Amino acid sequence: MPKLRLSDEEWRRRLSPRQYEVCRRKGTERAFSGAYHDCHTPGVYHCICCGERLFSSSAKFDSGSGWPSFSESLSREALRIEKDRSLGMLRLEVLCDSCGAHLGHVFDDGPAPRGQRFCINSVSLKLEPGAGEGGAGEEEGEKG
Ligand code: FE
Image (tube, rainbow, N blue to C red):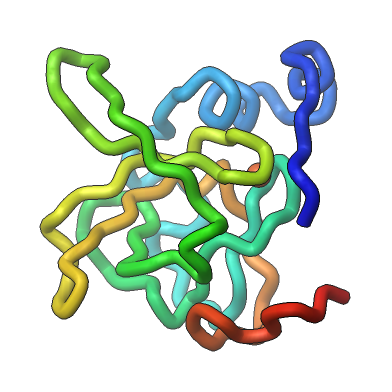
């Protein structure tokens, strides 16, 4: 998917106030408040801003954190990881590589074997139920 670069004004126009606050202003939704933290529907989670395929339900696990949690992304290229030194700590911020949307953070206390926990705001995601819920590499090359 081509990179999507829009002005702040355009993002504000396209997104709901909550989506804008989290995705474009690096906000965080309240724990247990989102649509997907307790969602077990098979499918693919897309970026709410640009539609890029980001996570599969097959990598989703119940972390108890109140945010949707994934052990890996659909593909390594889908995400961009940056250091986040806000709030007086060092965390790793997770962004959509296609459009730069803030998605959440990744921590190293996830399940084996990778040990990663992608802690993602529901509001930054859109679930496409039932769509190719395989792991990384699936449907590579062909986009509908
Ligand atoms: Fe995106």
